[in-house]
Length: 70
Image 1 (cartoon, one colour):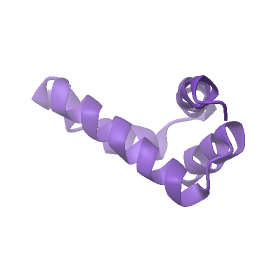
Image 2 (spheres, rainbow, N blue to C red; image 1 turned 90 degrees about the vertical axis):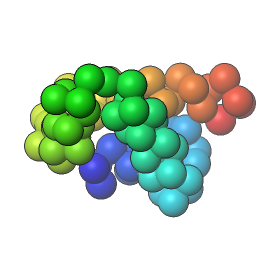
Image 3 (cartoon, one colour; image 1 turned 135 degrees about the horizontal axis):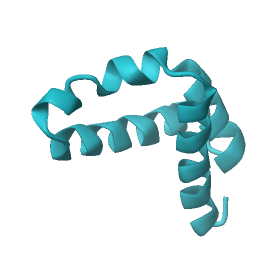
Image 4 (cartoon, helix red, strand yellow; image 1 turned 135 degrees about the vertical axis):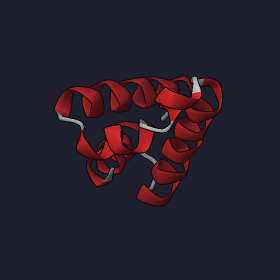
């Protein structure tokens, strides 16, 4: 998760604290809407994921930041 926080911070210009809050918000949103068996694995998937998941997530959040002029 630390790598994701750092990448989101770099891509959006947000502080690491704000990037962490954004990530936690997105993860919480996903966990609420995914089926329970899948939602239970979201946190561990983020912790154990390779660069591909981190890259995709930071791209997505970077694009969201771009919409707000970051």
